[in-house]
Amino acid sequence: MMRTLVAGAIAGATGEIALNVVAYADMVVRARPASTMPSKVVGRVADLAGIDLSQPGERTDIAETRKEASGALLGYVMAIVTAVGYALLRRAGLRLPLPIAGLAIGGAAMAVADSGATALGATDPRTWGTEGWVADIVPHAAFGLVVAATLEFIDP
Image (cartoon, one colour):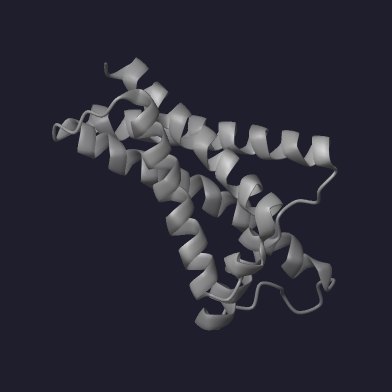
């Protein structure tokens, strides 16, 4: 069981790196700004929980910096949890062809992230347009494919 959890964590971290590389490459090619959705999610959760992300006497940009960093960390947590979940499914006997597994993992990760962000009011997918959807789908597909390939490599 521990091997499965560790393999899932490694696959999730590796997949998140792939997602970030693809997203940053897109930002370079299209000169698009970074997504503000992760920091908006963190800000909304902090607001709902009554947590102030700045301390008395700190500059006003400190809370925004904490939101941005927390959003990035949240991405890694979600990636690792998603990959561990798939690793557990594989251990239970679910074996899918690599491309199908990868796209399913990426789609599930995207659905969880986007539905949570939408429910919190941090985004509205109806306003994204084609470029917005592509900017979300392609990195998540890379995430899922790398997770599936990493798990297949570690535990064929």
